[in-house]
Each structure stands twice: as structure tokens, then as C-alpha cells.
Length: 139
Length: 104
Image: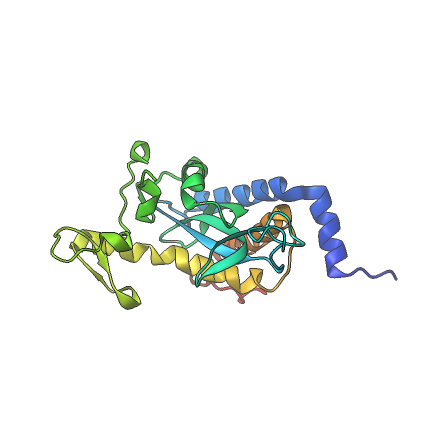
């Protein structure tokens, strides 16, 4: 019997399905949870989380990753990290995600905040949004 | 943000001036001082930190290369979190909806 490594299975699935279709599936599941009343979505909270990529800095360009060309240098929890950021919009009461965007770590939250909110508001009727104050700053 | 009736609550570090009234101030260990309404709103923000910690429990254990691979891995984790909640509700135990290891 032929056996497969986990990475072979997941990479084949990723090639066929892709990130966009996976996001649509996530959207369908969130709609199901909203319809059954678990996610009410009255208060939507925005925040971002750094995702560190397992690569070093490119010696020719220190703000980019060496083996991971799309990874960028950005602010992490303590200091700078090389990788990405997950921008999340989640429901306050249910503590469930409503929308998410993965972007390089050097991109600010402000750039994705409105898009995140629009995606979240498509699924729930939010009455209040809770986020960091710098999102509304002009700079 | 105004079109969606959004009001910023979390203060900038440079905005935490002593002597200015009506401003929310955050000190060490996330202790907040200021108007009661803003303090109650600030407490709601911790919900997203709990979602982040569930995300980091699983995501940091795998390596990925590229933005698409990172987005795919995050999608898998989100699906896992949501399916655990779905299963908990359908099996009649909504209190277990936020448990990571209950149905694994």
C-alpha cells in the first residue's frame, strides 16, 4: 500500500483547492454559526497577530526574507520579526473569527482595517467596533 | 470608520497625558483608568487576544514559505476553530465551543 507524507497530501490539496476557496469555505461555516445564533456579531473587535516565517534576512536586502521572498521585516510582540501578519476581525461574545487577511509584516493595520470590517459586516449586523486608536489616525 | 459608526478607544502611548480628563489611560499589566464607559469597552478587546492565542497554539508548529502558504495554513486553523465550535453546538455542549482539544 502506498503511503503519503502529510506534506505531500497537504501540498496536493493546496494546489487544487487554493487559499481563496478555503476562505470561501470559512465564510460558509461562519454563516452557519451566525444562523444558529452562536455568533451574534453585535461587537466586532479588530487586531493583528504577527506570524514569524522560518527564514533569515536576505544579506543583500535586510528588509526581505532570504528563502521566503514574500516575508518582510515588521513589528512583532517584542521587537522586529521577519514574516507576515494576520489581521483579524472577531466577535466579542463568541470569541470566533469573522474575517481575516494575511499580509506581509511590514504592512500597517490601517491598510486592511476597512476591508476587514466590510467582510465582517457582510455576515453580521455589528453595532460597535473595537480597535486600536491608531487605525483612525491620519498618518 | 465614521460611516460604520466606529469610535476609537485604545489610546496611543503618547496620548496618556496626566491631568487631561476624559481620556482612557492604560498602565502596566493592562490596568486602565478613565471614564467607566471607555473602561468597559477596553475590556472587550481581550476577546481578540484569546482568538490570537488559539491561533498561535497551532500555527507556530508548522513551517511555511510564501504568502499563499501562510494564508492557507491560517485558513486551516480558522476552519479547525470554527468546526470545533460547530460540533460543540450540534452535540449540545455549547460551553465546549472554544475548547481546542475537546474534539481532537
